[in-house]
Image (tube, rainbow, N blue to C red):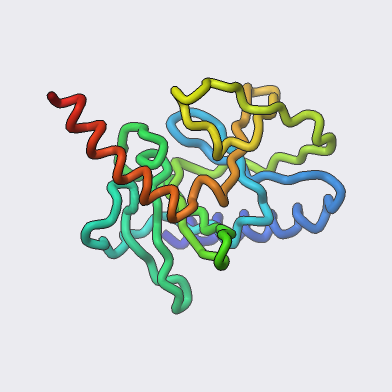
Length: 186
């Protein structure tokens, strides 16, 4: 377990150096979820923590794993697999919680996102390299995707954390999901 903490501490220190090293370009922390690469604005990332069990919250949406105590602050923890409608998997030693700041109309919130693993820091020197997400009409919700970037290994989907983890949006989504599940069962 000590190795895991040291690895995460080293990665966090590396991320801080990366942020100060390239003030001109855009930087995204990339992570893996169900074999796909995603990225979030590195300036939204507060820290990366190894997975530890959280305290469950009764009547919370299905994708809310619970809450954790982060230096005295109670932080909700969201499983991004479940938020995206992907199948749930058992957490492994590479499963991490990315703690991010989410900005809303009223205030900033701290939220933890459970992901399969953290990959790297993606530096984008030319904003034109970020392509708009495809338009699927109303069939697929893509409002939380800020763009797509092609890299050697494939594509990275860039996420808008403020929209993805909007408390209002997540609870509105929760009220729709059970109704969809009941329709599918009938």
